[in-house]
Structure formats: structure tokens, C-alpha cells
Image (cartoon, rainbow, N blue to C red; front, side):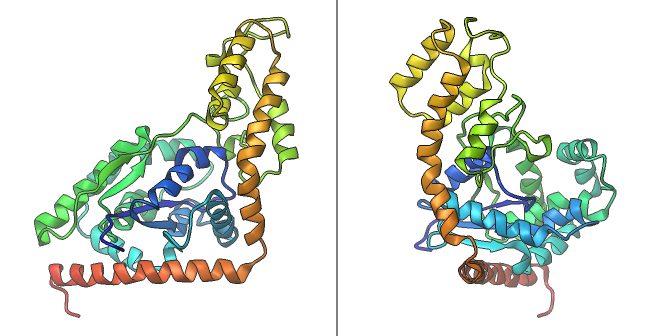
Length: 331
């Protein structure tokens, strides 16, 4: 696409997205689509790796994620938006890479160990779950992505992909580039209880939430624990509401006023939250309008996914032709 460098990024379809996804990835995707040839995949095979026992919600979750992406501003005219399983070459390259990936690389993967501990209510002792980093590598390598947008804490996860690239290239010739880490600048977006915003914690503000729902959630949100009473001075840096303010509120003068009011007990927490809501409504209004335009328009959503998959498939087919030739398989 006009000689632009390619980027792949994806999200697992586990339900509606929240403000953390917006702050941590989607806002950046909207910028990247203007600079790079972007391929954004709803990675449903990855979802099945943990939800294989009950896959009844995967299809509906794919649609919810698509709606949230479009709402925030991911543009199908600028980026290829598609469902992973609709581009069969993802699974095909995954199989090819699984032939050369040492078992020890997967067993030592820190993400694998963390997921096993965090999802103890699910049986993850499967071949596919152990090998999910190989599928992740296939997702990236299929488009010869020059880089992958990740948060600062996710950079090490890409190293396994780079190791697989080096091993493939060593066996079969220099076919794939080693993807760089494209660090995503993102604001801190805590959940309603002060922990990381997560659907599993039940502490999320969802992109699809209407403003009444958002206010009802924010109204009871955890604040600086030192402010027991309205007259107690606070420390904004210890308050999760302040972190959300810094994402939505771009008025430096007002932020300084709120900071001073909190530290002097000049304003209360409810006052602070009301000021925050003004900025939340201003940013989320156009996002909700875009989401509503697509809701219920199954034909438009299907056309977006079909067009995106066709565009992705064109690159993927070319890559797999090169893979077959490099390995020496008969076609």
C-alpha cells in the first residue's frame, strides 16, 4: 500500500472493550493507520485456546470488538480489519512454524506460566495453549510486519517471535524480517477499584457504556484513601480518578486547579468526578455516535470484514507461496 511499512496487531474477542483498551491500544491504532499499512485482526483462534470448552460467544464477541474498533476510529478505508480465521494462512503458517519451534522455548515463556496461574478455573493443559506464541508469531510474520505496537510491559513477549524468525531464516533463507518493538505511549487507565481495568475484575468502564452508566460507575469509584471526609486534603497522584482525568482532560489550567483543590480540600471527590464527566462526555460522544451508526447494520459490518480479509489474504497468499518455495514443498 503506497510502499508503507506493514504492521499487524490483534485482539482476542472476549467481549466488549473498555476504556483501558482504548487508552492502551486503539487510540494509537487510529494514529498508526495514517502512517503504516495496518492489518488489524480479531484473533478468534487465540480466543479458542482458552474458551474452547464453550465457544458459543466467540462469534458475537467478534462483532462487539468490531463495533468498538469502528467507534473509536479504526477506519476500514485505511486499515485492513478482519477476523483471523477468515484468512486461512494464519493457521497454515502456524503449522509450518510449529515444526521448527523447540518445546523448551514455549515451556519457559513467562506469559504461559502467568496465564496458567491466573486462569485456574479453566483446563489449559492443551497442545494449542502451550503453542499460542507460535500462532502469535505466525500472525506477525504472515504480513512481514516490520514492527508490532505493544505497551512497555509487553516488549519481552516479542522476543520469542524474533527467535522463531531467526530459526526459520537459518533453516530456509532470509525470508522474514525480525519485527521491532513499536512502543505504544499510553495513559494509565485504572479500574473503578484502583486495580488494573479488567472485565474479569468487574471494574471496567466499557466503550459501549452510555453516559448515565458511566456516571453511576464513576460516582462510586475509589479515590485517595486518605480522604475519609470532604474536609480531608488529598494527594491526586494516589487517586485513580486523577489518572483518568489525565487521559480525558486536556485543559492544563483546569487540571492544575483540580490538583490544587484536591490537595487543599478545596473541592470534594464528587466535584472532581463531575468535572471529569464533562470531558468524558466530550470525548465519548462522537465515539458513541459512530458505534450507533454501525449497530444493527449487519450488511455493512460483513462487508468491512470481507473487504479486510480479502486485502489481508492477498498478502498472506504471497507469503505462503514464498514459505512453500523456501522449505521446498511441492505445490
